[in-house]
Length: 177
Image (spheres, rainbow, N blue to C red):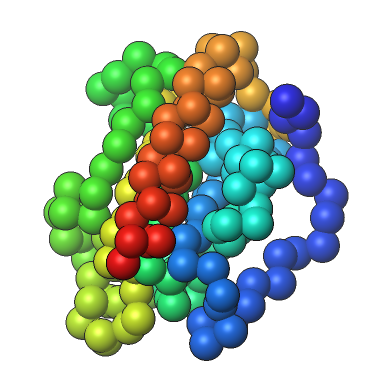
């Protein structure tokens, strides 16, 4: 796997009403901030195999910008890096929206995923009914450099395997709905 920054044009996601695929993989991160790009790299690993069945979006966006990226899909798999300090580096963590306590951001500019999910619910947006959040506990998401630390790179195949397993479940569930 190539853990370097993608030098491509920004992804032009379809408008919610034009979305033909029912499942979205939303990868969050920045691929020039060391381990922060692990979600983006996982999305690239999934794209070749699942790009025809799921919309796979890489973004450095955060906060309220995520509303538009998630709106209109039946299910979503969100991939990200995390530093909780509670788990060894390389631990794959899975969260559901209910796992997040409602936290009020000090400003809409700093809204996180919990605020985005809460706002979508209150606005009655056409939002995914199933949301799975996979995060890899990483060592260094702060240093400006391309590539992953050795510990995060060693865990990367497990992260992708778990993402693939959860994506298969979402695709099957969306097909049955």
